[in-house]
Amino acid sequence: MTSAPSRRTRAVDEEGFPPPPFEGIPADGFAFLAELAACQDRAWYAENKARWEVGLREPLSALLASLADRLSAAKLSLRFDARRGLFRLHRDTRFAKDKSPFKTNAGGLLSGDGGKDRPGLLYVHVEPGNCFTACGFWHPEPAVLARMRDSALADRAAWRRTAKALAAKGLALSDGEALARLPRGCEAAAGTPEEGLMKLRNWIVRRKLTDATMRTPKALEEIAAFALEAAPLLRFGWDAIEA
Image: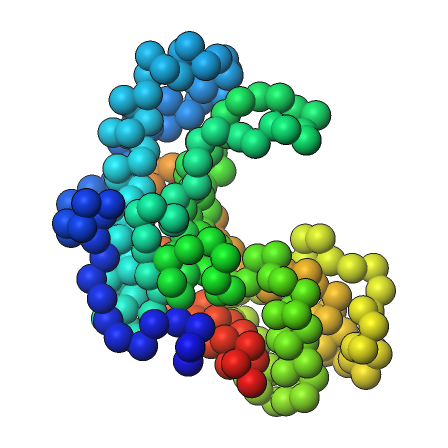
């Protein structure tokens, strides 16, 4: 598949060196986010920036890099790029009513090329009381989403095998942001098991993670297991995009 790299490459950090092993998100990383949410002050952030780097940015990079290596060994080619795969803490407030300068969470992803624009991703979200991981296709371009919908309707047996594999692991596509009506061109899905699928704008499954888990190396194991359970969704989408 061209959507994901075909050869195994070991993750490296921004300087080109293998990252340190993931040992968990430090408790102070969670404390930093909670305190930042309470104050949203640029001067406070400047004084505490080192806590962001040590408590969140560095361990999250180590986690994502380790996930990339673990999944590559399992034949699921998702890459981590330290320059593109981490989300900024600063919010873009140019067109937002909420002018709070900072996000209250940390996040990063793996994708076929390590960037945020390649369809098909594994996302990790760190936020006090709201940690989770998600996998699939988030806000795909209209042409990409159309290809996935067309593929599911053209080969319903293949899609139903994918859905069955996900259900066997307790995974269901999120219906957030779903359309109220079938989109144009998907009328053939009316009254069939694929009707709900056609209304989805995102093809995403997710799993909640506890703060306690995220503070330990066990987070790596749980997220890697989730990604492999969600892999049928990624492979179905990638095949559809290439078709």
